[in-house]
Image 1 (tube, helix red, strand yellow):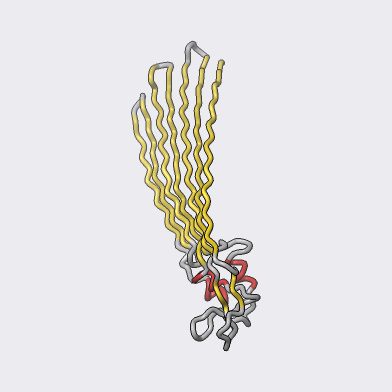
Image 2 (cartoon, rainbow, N blue to C red):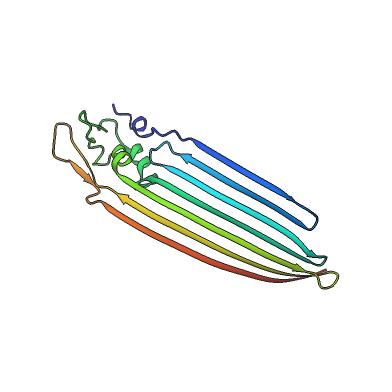
Length: 212
């Protein structure tokens, strides 16, 4: 009578979030800034999601008919899960499928065979990791000019940068039938290490004329 959920879901699920914001200025200049931090642990060991973020918004009246706004935001988000993740084909789905008649651990500490060789406890404790880091930056520069009464000329430039860094190690783990010293299954058949980096950069410009 193996309680797979009790054996695998041993994480705290603890979530913390901090935020610091400041603002101030005068009739000609205003600024608002903020810093954020979030850290979440999963009920599945090996799961962790962090996020660091910042934002700065400024507005300045250069002259009576000229205004400049500059806004920047950025984030850095490292995430970790056990190898294969926790989704459709990950640890959580494997836990749900496990019948209670299959052993998770043998008396000598080796991993039990599980259902058809899938043992989510083995994956969590010794199966590797799946790490992803997301980074993003967005800026907006806006300039407004009123040459005559009722007319507003606006220039807007917004660059946007994104980066996704991935590193995954899927370790081959052997599982055993009780009383046997020969592995019943080894999953995956071979250990694999993959890395990838995807980056994007977008620029957007607007020239607008408003007249009332």
